[in-house]
Image (tube, rainbow, N blue to C red; front, side):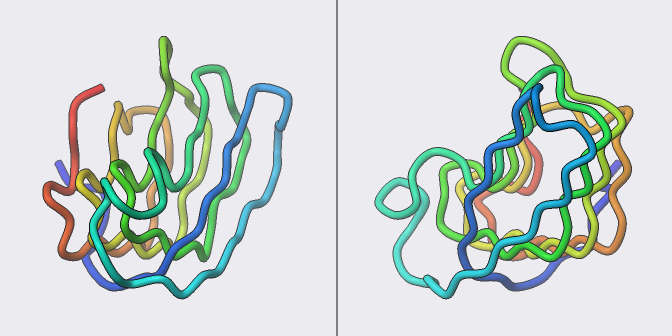
Length: 117
């Protein structure tokens, strides 16, 4: 089931590691050209495997291989994703969304909105 909505964005990059509990993230950018392989790199936002208690909100993530990456070897849980705009990424969200809260996020023009881990 898709926990997101669907709509525009620009580019932001954040990396949430295990050390960053209860951190509120928000980035803004304005790069809307190209594709995920040539712009922005591999991930726009990366929430690592043991991250918990983070609020990731108001980000615009465009032109990455993966817009939001959830985990590497494990699955982060207890994080909240609100009002993020995920657009024109090869994959919008990669990894399991179980155990996290997704509210009012928008996905549009991604190669695919959700990819397996």
